[in-house]
Image 1 (cartoon, rainbow, N blue to C red):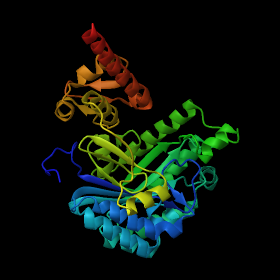
Image 2: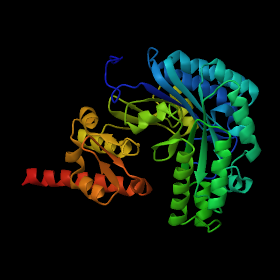
Image 3: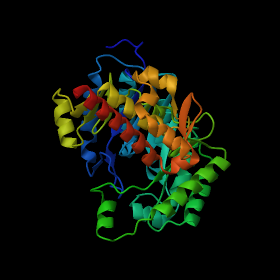
Image 4: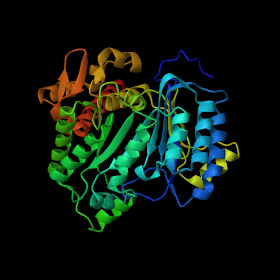
Length: 398
């Protein structure tokens, strides 16, 4: 295996494990999931064990994240098997972060005990809303009163709790969103993720929109909800450390910070992605194919690519700018081999002049105005870098 002294953008200090099983398909979900396939869970754990074994030897990590799907859809005994297997191949270093995604209606006392006994120290709870009618629009399985009960149960054994909320739901008003934020804060979470609703092509929610069965919020209304989240959560003492994420001091999600730094990570399970030694790979999203290939000793990889250095630098720019601290010029140069100003060109100065970026000479980050149009700013910087590369290629040809 590669030497552990490799930098974190080449060799992983983080690992993600995907558990696709769910009780139902939420309307907005575009993740790799398996509904009505509970009879395949034990076989899936066999396949996951086989895939983890391809590491050859255990690889210690600083962060572990079990996502889905709904990992806590598994029974307590299945969860115990899953966690023991993951920790066998991906032992967590002392002081590491071990997160798991959960739905409120799946967190029984015995499952929480299994999580805590195996070192899970951070629970990310998919609350989404505290209003039954909005949960129904999203086709969520839980009811609002189950959220508080789940938080109370978790806190008996695990003290680091994060809540996910969604804004921009059809029918959602500023009053309802403010109430969601207030009810979430009343539960004393350590971390809050606030995501704008997206209509991913092919999802049930997208199909209902196409048929005219629901009316999306307009951009101005959605922006107002985002601004309300920033104001409310910052006033409550949360730091807005990434476009969609807020944390109390010392409670940032360390695992997700790996993604936003564009550093390496392991990925195992159906539909899981990984980024190792500069190569990105994506496993098949088809459950039967994943089981067949993995149990036969074959790779479950469906897509694979290794970006040229210039494209990797642009990708690093795009993800790092989502962070509150933005992009540190010296660190960017060390990680990519390129100067930030050479990659982004005159677009940097343009967005600083427009008030969307702040530049202190050492680093560049989004302003409050810039956060409102982050995707547009990032696209503009990337477009400039591509145009510069095209110009350079033309000059070389001439």
